[in-house]
Image 1 (cartoon, rainbow, N blue to C red):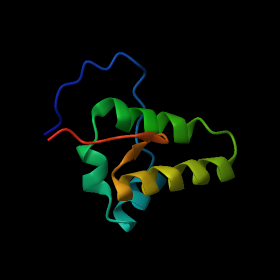
Image 2 (cartoon, rainbow, N blue to C red):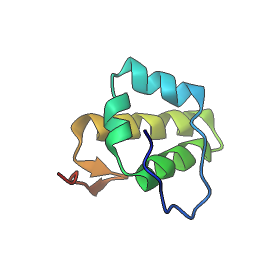
Image 3 (cartoon, rainbow, N blue to C red):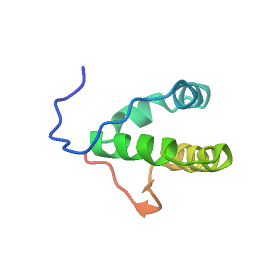
Image 4 (tube, rainbow, N blue to C red):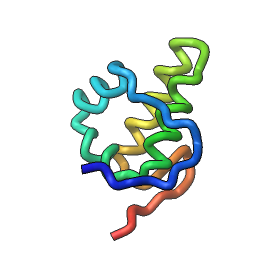
Amino acid sequence: MEKTSRLKRERYPMPDFIREALAAKKLTAAYDARPPYQRNDYLGWITRAKLPETQQKRLAQMLDELAKGDAYMKMAYRAKT
């Protein structure tokens, strides 16, 4: 169940190619564990890229950060426990 969010920014829908990449890398749970603002920021950042190559580069960065669990947009991140 999705927690209600106070997110005021535009909310971006998740494209199929991102959903499929998360599932293929078994990172859906890691993505879902991130705060709503981070999930939305990742989606907007990836989908706003004009070139497909840039979208793929950004997607790869997101997947890497989720796999390692210690970064968000190249900034240090520690999940709240």
